[in-house]
Image 1 (spheres, rainbow, N blue to C red):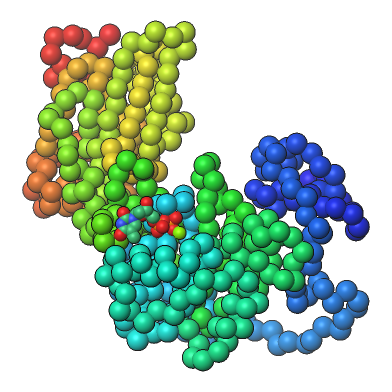
Image 2: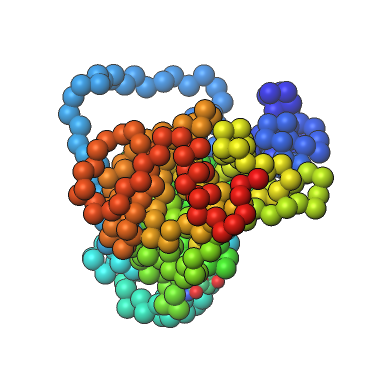
Length: 471
Ligand code: TYD
Ligand code: MG
């Protein structure tokens, strides 16, 4: 809250390119977001072109009528793309006049996904404009050809000046959807900073958002992200838009996950799953089958977690490796789950389960590159850890779900019935689940093994261990 508030009226201004905080003196680290070397000199924290601030003097305000909470409302109409996995994440289609930001690593497939959405909409008779600031129209066309979409009547442009773009969009029939790929390449002639700077990104986004709100076209902004997962530059845009989606994937895997991070028109916990193929992205309507594909022969340290992403059950394999350490401080490495959550499960297993893990390195991996955020994965993680430590192979046809409390108690979790149904559908025969919670009867067709405390779980797994006891 220090330098960022006191901005000199004249002279150079330094703006953090990560979070947009403004300083009048250069410094190595941004006080606001803690990023190093992110300050860059920009001409002026210019008022937004045409914005309220730019009128300067004491303009008289217009009087407007106030409304009540009660009254006529209509559901936002939707523009359905016809790509099920995308429509699910947007909450049932694009909302006219709304602005969506799609973030993701370069090369993850944002342009591909959006071109497919554009083509699908255009083929349904909607006017769609795709503005690429990064590729030439030739490159975009080539890609569309490869995906077999060249016939779709998408209006295409390779432009970066927002005034030109808005003027062009004003011609002819109002587009239903406008894609700007990417917001970092846009610049506005009314903002005196170099393209790519926070001021430019913010100014350009503001002008484009104003266009969307006044015209009623749905606007999609593409934003590249930095290594730490934050949308660089466009992070300052996040709060201006109606929805923020992120497109994620692991380099080594071909599937991609579209995840809602903020959505004023729908739930934020939905995911859409795609697979990158030679002909663009194809929808994965049964993600569990994909995440479980290529499961190795039964081996210690693997447990299948029956998870839920949004409204959809997703089965995924949790892999653990517990090995004696050669270091003073044992390693804990996690991919796809929270570090702090692993530390908690380890502490509970040590305190209540009688395991000694202080001299062991622990590696935990969610197979397939999925990121699991649910506490319901606790007992799947615990089972995988105990299995790896003891060498006991977990029954291959079982799934696990349940939350572990600090006391070692295993707590019931939500939507258990859907988890069981999914497991049954994929051919699993048994489920390890919390003893509390709803009674599902035998409807699932699974052999239900209920546990109330981690000690019971540890004992059950250890009993399967080859010779070695739990130490
Ligand atoms: P792209 O959509 O350009 O990524 P972004 O816009 O997020 O930077 O995707 C580029 C990657 O996708 C590139 O590495 C090639 C791959 N790809 C395919 O594998 N198949 C395809 O049909 C297309 C169009 C791209
Ligand atoms: Mg791109």
